[in-house]
Image (cartoon, rainbow, N blue to C red; front, side, top):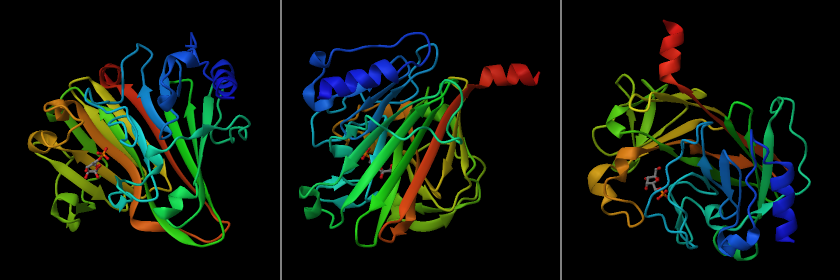
Length: 315
Ligand code: TA6
């Protein structure tokens, strides 16, 4: 069954450019099945995008060299789906439990919507349905559906949809996104200037950003609230700009643990903070409440451009 499903997906969906990587499921760790092609890799464990690459094969997402690939720990890196809580313990797990569960591939997904489609787009739908065991940790049944779309330019769009069962409830959500950067001191984040943020280093006390773009000289762990729908991460070292566009997700988490905290994180190298930055499209300050039968959609589109190319064009 798994074999059929995964091969179907790889044959029919992962044609993202010149070649399609086909893998024997026998080669994969049964706990860590994933679908992969040249430009992206998604683990069915957690519905986690684990790799996203440029045309030239450069990795755009950070994964720690010390990441633990053993449930129930979430893999430190990529894009993790945080639901039904972000920054709160649900069971023993921070950031909710769906990133520590096995998702399944939907073999008959609905077609791309007109807003999602352009020639050459490929996509995969993963689904996680809550189990009876999950009710011990969170007393609501749900189905979470993640659609990952790779477009012709190599840009990645993630769309989450969820349905409720018979009771209303509230949840928070984040696409916990580890971007790979050259050196954190060479990075700036634009689009969050003068906004309010909750400082997670100070028990989520509320402050107003006073500065220009965000730059990094020490640990940063903030939830910017009611943000605009576009945030830009400029990496001067790699001469690359990430553009993060979101819908249905009012907040943005910005996190870099810096030197001291890094040493306390077991699945994180001491110096790896230099090469990563989390910028998460999220809904945290005001949890989303759904009535029975209502559906919620949260969408993030990640694109990148070469700053070098950009400035040459500008000349
Ligand atoms: O991204 C913000 C944050 O909540 C930080 O406070 C930090 O604890 C981090 O996430 C933990 O993320 P992890 O990937 O370890 O679950």
